[in-house]
Length: 147
Ligand code: SF4
Image 1 (cartoon, rainbow, N blue to C red):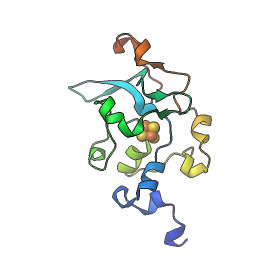
Image 2: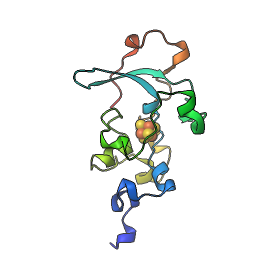
Image 3: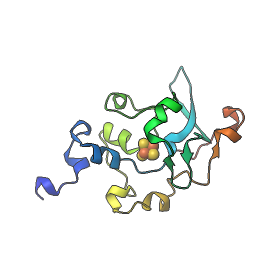
Image 4: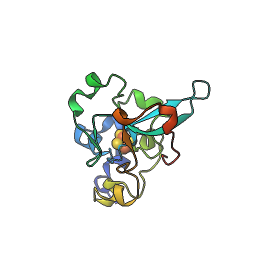
């Protein structure tokens, strides 16, 4: 196999990827749009089923991606810098996996060539979350189905 035949995510480091390649790493699971609680002592992350009000749950995409950081100050933009310590991202997140030197999962759309493979693999949050506008205390919404 020539070097050009190797998929870009195996051939390039994260900081070598162009914008289109970088954006295509996102599998559209929307797990990072769920609120989570962190144990300050252990850094253990506990996911909730409460999603950000900007999330369109049907498409699993942000409804105001360009302005998300302004409208939701807690929303972390994924960059090379923040991926130095990606413990707070879901374990299946492509950015985290590559930052940790691991492979993309077999169901990732880049691997399958089909965007719906993330849904078929049960990785998208659609149908399993509620909007923050309808939620009470986050502690009441902890879930264990996020990996
Ligand atoms: S967790 Fe990672 S792969 Fe999933 S939607 Fe967020 S950025 Fe994309």
